Image 1 (cartoon, one colour):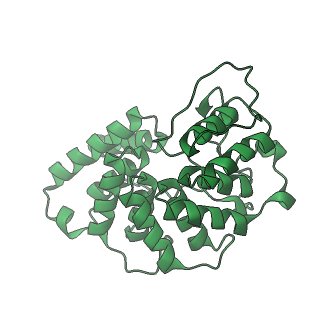
Image 2 (cartoon, one colour):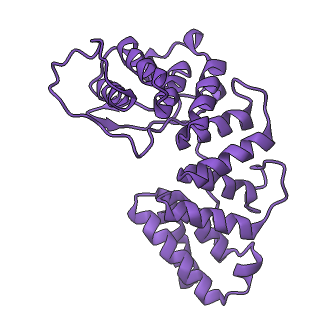
Length: 276
């Protein structure tokens, strides 16, 4: 019995919401919303300032960029009006806070709105890209990733796969595992439809998936496991089959423990193969 495994595709769209001082990610409402497929994610370095819920978030403040940005994140978590939140991000961005510029980009793209509140006529993708570019220039890794995705898809900017690749690589280098995962997909021979125009390279795919997985991108472990089970790289083809399968199962087990359903599917199929 052959093991029929399908590598995971690139993450499509996620929406950043402020809920109970936590981030809740959900898929875009339909596959037609290509213009909204810019991933929203707050940088892991951002801090949340916990204060009394009665605070008036729209009040003018004269703090520095970091304090203003923390205040804006707090306001977003508490569900303050969008205008008040964006005002605080604008103040922080005026102090040259890179992540605040990124959040202004999310606002332009409608990604700070709840799905039911998003109005397409108010979405400004070119404006979003401009903010992403400014934030990326300031070292914001999530902005680098969103900019790369926009350049790849031509969302709010002319498509440019060479520049997209540059920003995916920068995002990966700055610690955003989605950048490394995406580069793995583009190099993965089992993903012929995912490309930046370069030739497929199994060894490069393994390296990018490993980097993403080690940085906490659990779904990368699924694809990395599949490349061990079906070796599409020169290095892995030289490994004994039993060793490759052991590593694959170990990767899928770790991903399954992180609640990645595709990893559980891989483990079940692997068990069926061994029983046969």
